[in-house]
Length: 332
Image (cartoon, rainbow, N blue to C red; front, side, top):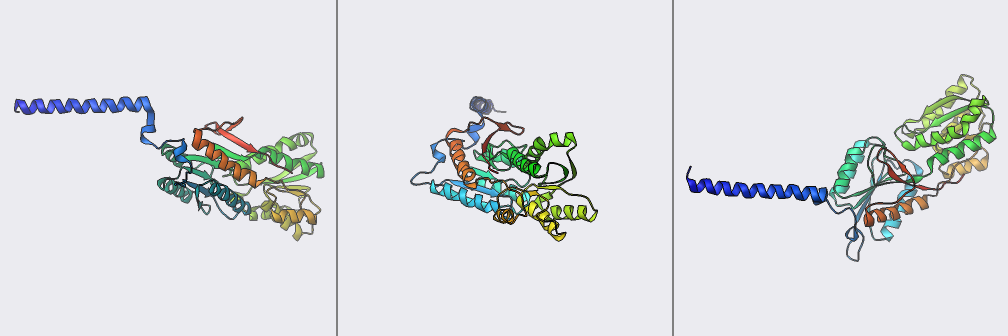
C-alpha cells in the first residue's frame, strides 16, 4: 500500500477513535439524558403559545365512575393549559400498551394510566420514561412498573370501612366475600382491609367466611352466580361483601330472587347512584364514598409537580420500585 495512503488511513482512524471515546465519556458523565427529552422543567408546561399533550389512558368505560374521573381530570388539565387525549383500552392489555406508545410517539409530556392489568406494563412504562414522559398510575397500581407516582385513595381503609359496617350489622354468622379482579391491585388492598377488621371475629369463631371468590374483570355475573349457587345448596348466608357497588348489586339481585334482599346485609363501595338508591330502599347496607374531584384534580397537580421538579414527595411508597403513593381520604 502506498505510504501516503497508509498514513492517511491511520490519521482518520485515530480521529474516529478519539470521537468514539469522547462520546463514551460524555455518556458516562451525563447519563442517558443525552438520548431523551428533559424529564422536568418549564419547557414541558403550558405557555401562551404551547399546549403540551397529556394522555389519559383508561382500561374501560364500562365502570360508571371512570367517566367522572375522565371528565374531572380533563377539565382541570385543560383549564391549566394542557391538551388531553383520552384513550380507552376496552379491557385489552395489548391495546393499552399500543395506546401508551402512540401517545409517547405523539410527544405527550405525561401519561396518566388506569391499568387494565397491573402486571403487564413494565416494558412500556420504561419506554415512556426513557423518552422523558412522566407516567402516573391513577387509582390502580402497576405493581412491577417504575411509574413516577401512584395517585389513589386509601384502598385498605376502603376495605376496613366496608367490613366494619358489616360486622356491626352481622356480628356472627356466615360471610361471603366477592373480591374484585385479580388483575387489579386495588382488589388485593381492599381484601387486606376486610381481614384487618374481620380476623379477630374469625379467630374467635364468631364468623366464618363460607365463600370467597374473585370476580375476574370485575364481572357482575360471577357475584350473581356465587350467591345463587350458595342459596341453591341451602347454605346459610348472613352477610356479603361485594368489592364494589356493581358486585354488591349483582349479589342483591340474586338475593331478590329468593325474597332475601334487605334481610341480609350487603356492602360495596364507589357510591354509585344506584347503590345510594338501594341504601335508601334498605336493600344495601352501605357504600364507601371516594371524592373523585379530589383525586382527579389532585392527579393534575401532582403531574405538574413531576413536570416541574422531576419528582414528588410522599410519606408512603408502594410496589417493587418504592413508587411514591399519594393517598386521598375516603368516607363511609
